[in-house]
Image (cartoon, rainbow, N blue to C red; front, side, top):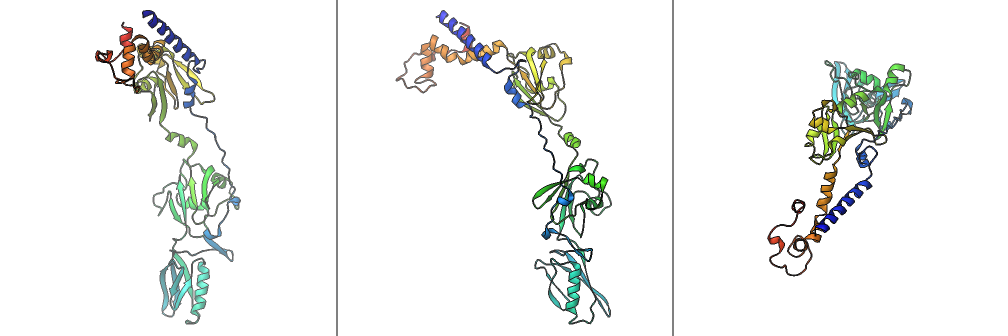
Length: 394
């Protein structure tokens, strides 16, 4: 029987060695499967800059209309109008909020259509209609509160104390308003602003505007005229975006107590990473640990002797890790043998202790095979079976 056990042990050693040799290991001792954890190189998509003249305009969203070369505001629902009429006793003024119907009443007149018309057009029509009741009426229509047309300006916009409204927010459009002039009037941009790739969303599509070029080169037609519903986002410069990503992500894998991902808000060293992973196991090949660094196309394998670092306190090896590093702690030969041996226990039980194998894996045991009534006085009445420890002690 001892010869059988020795033969099986040699089979296990041979299987363990052969299965290990079949693993895909690179020349520096790190499983290539770990390379999949490395960050893939960023694929920078070039931003297609849109010249101002190529940005489309939508008639239904326009804020003004040119009248004799003068930009006149187009009245909308919610705007507050002030209508003034000069009388013999003085000037009479009344404030009227434009209702959803788009029509207002004034003096002797009802149902005056104002939505979609300019203030000049409403003034002219109201004066003509009043001529039936008043001799040579003198009418003035102005917008007191602008409500119907808005633009959303977001991102790196400065807040200036003392201005009625500044910084990111929703801004009413009061006529012919350009992007650059609006930005300056509400506080300008912050030092973090990336003016070369300002995002303008209009009609469901994003256009990238080089506002920096507008500022430095200027010229006729270089600016963008804002329309109702425009959304403008001024992004951060790439350097400031990277500063926000302070989290370091490090993988610690292999023969450690709790392998997995470690995330920290500050720098992290090798000792700190191993400590957060619960320390190395007894089966760890500490002198053969590796740091896998870089991207998946061109990884860098850095040997790190954890035995010297941990057992001999050689702090010169306590290197600072980089975001995305993968720490791999391989197992020793004895560790591999132990794992293979534990997997072979059922087979050894079948060879050396058939009664125990029968009791564990057939009727009455942990298996599902129905072999009839279980005999009494079996091996399981004296114990739970054979483990690697009890077998090796024999």
